[in-house]
Length: 538
Ligand SMILES: Cc1cc2nc3c(=O)[nH]c(=O)nc-3n(C[C@H](O)[C@H](O)[C@H](O)COP(=O)(O)OP(=O)(O)OC[C@H]3O[C@@H](n4cnc5c(N)ncnc54)[C@H](O)[C@@H]3O)c2cc1C
Image 1 (tube, helix red, strand yellow):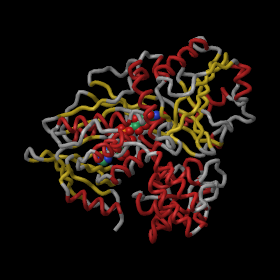
Image 2 (cartoon, rainbow, N blue to C red; image 1 turned 135 degrees about the horizontal axis):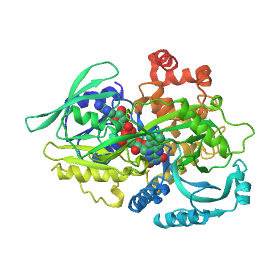
Image 3 (tube, helix red, strand yellow; image 1 turned 180 degrees about the horizontal axis):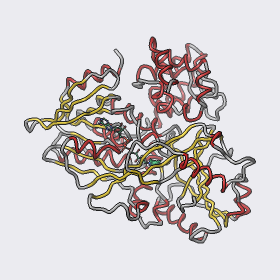
Image 4 (tube, protein in one colour; image 1 turned 90 degrees about the vertical axis):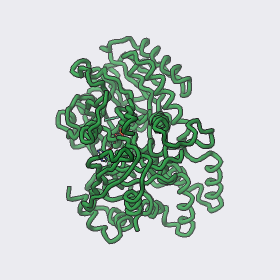
């Protein structure tokens, strides 16, 4: 029986302490934190895990330097602390990266003031990262000839962090860790409606989006982590809250790499907002925008594309400007922003805070998570645990000692053991074709302790170090794990969320590669052709 089927069987036959609706970052960290503290927790998502906003971010783990301009010092201090914790406990998934910000001649503030702001930011981050630098226009030109410095008054370089693999992979690893600690989780299960039954438990009517089957899940409490759909879910369940969401659309375009340096290029767009050119493997991801929208299912438009292309072209010295034909993939999502019900959101929309709010209705045991950021995810996990304890649900200590943390990559001692094991098998030096990292680093970052089993497989079959699809970073030794443990239901789950292949590889190339069918056979078995056709017919 597939892991997804096993999980669904358990969902329909267990009474949970907590059922989490929504497996984006907020739902995934809640599940991981609660499961680690011994709570009987279920997690469902109507799409794939991270299949909505959490797959559309800029992949940045950052303290929000731009919020200094709106004097949100408490938010910046909190986000910097959250960033530092992620850098400390996810040393391979979350990497420090330099941001080179060009200051335009027409900018509202003098470059020295921006530099002072970067130092304040560094201090608020408790000096955890490398110190900021000031760059004259000449130095900026030397460092990044791709920047059109004729428009600049200099530049500032400072540090933040980014997710090496992808946002969705980061989220999935929390789901994986939750399941390893006893959580029951499945994707493609939509919560239709929940009813509070006889003051005892919630009955949640669930539809399996894969086969249309309907069943009921029972739980003593609910966490609504539906992201942009939190308000809709609450309305259906008759839950009244003080907060609600408004939406801001943001898009990114992925194009061939515009510079070989491993740094983020930051610019001020025509609307005065910061936008970025972010390294993404062999590509550059450019964005983002910030447009008020009323519908979370808002598609990307030509106007969005032109905004990004016009802004980046005006700030770069490329031999040929980037055009729509250079776009390899697109990302488009809505940020759910938490506002109090009586706030007039027509005023100062861009100034709305990006903080998260968790609202608890203790009478009915029901919680709603509004807003948030990937960067702040560990705080969400901890706060949710605190609220669940308030409901009287038994939970092991919220102040777990260091070795009982619910988050983080395996300890350094485990990595040493892994490395020594690989050295004994003479696998420690295997470099990856077309990549600067070693196979060891890649497997550890993506799979943690499960990477041990992959080394064993390679020992018996050396060809497993070959890539499945030429130029796409996915190796044969990963396939069995993906098939067995990662609840992959469609080719999109695999190419877009468990990996970022669909973001960096042109679709035609994927379609014509024999490796794509090999991948389908390994993961979907007899359904390989069906899954392949389903993906490429869209
Ligand atoms: C363009 C953009 C750039 C961003 N960049 C960054 C960044 O660089 N760094 C950062 O920290 N943050 C960033 N963010 C913010 C961050 O991505 C979001 O705050 C976060 O992903 C929201 O997570 P979530 O879990 O609340 O929502 P989601 O990820 O949307 O998860 C909610 C889930 O609930 C599910 N769901 C909905 N209804 C139901 C139902 N009835 N039954 C079951 N499941 C249901 C959905 O399918 C969805 O998967 C960015 C956001 C955007 C849009």
